[in-house]
Image 1 (cartoon, protein in one colour):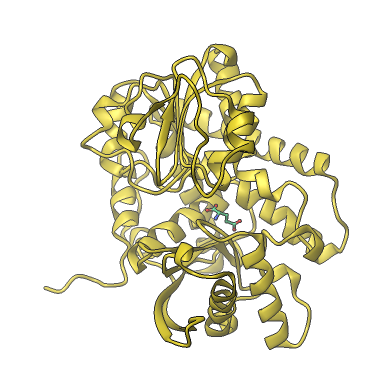
Image 2: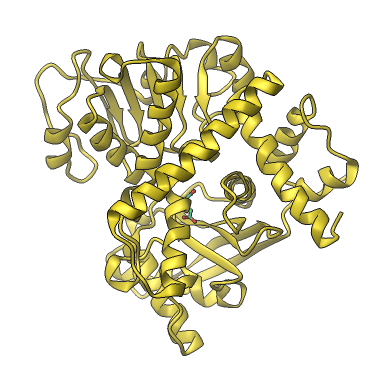
Length: 414
Ligand code: GLU
């Protein structure tokens, strides 16, 4: 028998795992195991050479019971439809966990953006919007930055959308530059949110931040800002990596020096620093491991060797579902992606509010509201995990799934 192509394998596996704590009816399971809408399309991109290439592109709108769908667009050579479904499912849960008035979505283009010139990147961003403008909008589906897409990409996309529609619509994209209706604090929000969550765990478990040794995998928006913020807060960061190289110093790395001398994805030369591979970093003798790069890094194969006591998931889906049980059994506390990296979408929500009210907030107000929002969800998850005797991921899934199903029931879809 041919399998059901619409299903999301990751969602199905995670929902099945929930069964011990949350019994879903057959129709609830069937509703959640597949996205509402998956768009697969081709963007013709004219290269500077005059050649035209045709790029596989996707946008998955997973669930919209709680509001317009929301989630990033990534440019990466490994983008595919199954990954977009998985990440859209996670966005739906993330928004529901924090009671944001959004459903979940994700999109991407299968391309290596580093091989594109700036003009090609602009044409690609505009091309993406030309293909999907009828399926997005401030009250329909609201994209944002993700891997390899930044505020400049959002600016081009927002401009293209406004030109096609013939009116200004800042609320259709979040993560825009400040001058075009962006929010203060949005650029560092993912890392800031992760730092708040780590602090909440420390306070609860009575840990001293100055005694914690951190390893961070990934040096993009999330990883770099996390290194900066956590270093300013007194943590010792002993290892860093990106897709090119990794560095390690048992005594702690000089983060301000590294950030100011970071060029073209090369870390500066430094004394006392040893090279380290991405795999070695994951298994390093440290206290807190922060995966802030791609998905599927901690797997059934290496989970047993993870020595950190705490994992803060700044990336989306860095831990494979089979690895979770191993980490839990070994007493590793995983602060799951839909909690730990939600700072980005929470401040996106603040940006969207500011766009519709035309009243702009101070950075202080943004961070105060972000911290409060994260704190509420954190304690709710801790309570649920104590009641259900489960890990934090299961607890956060229970809360999120119940919120989505409640909205579906009220709408009459169940
Ligand atoms: N791409 C980010 C995420 O995965 C942000 C999404 C958004 O702001 O909509 O959470």
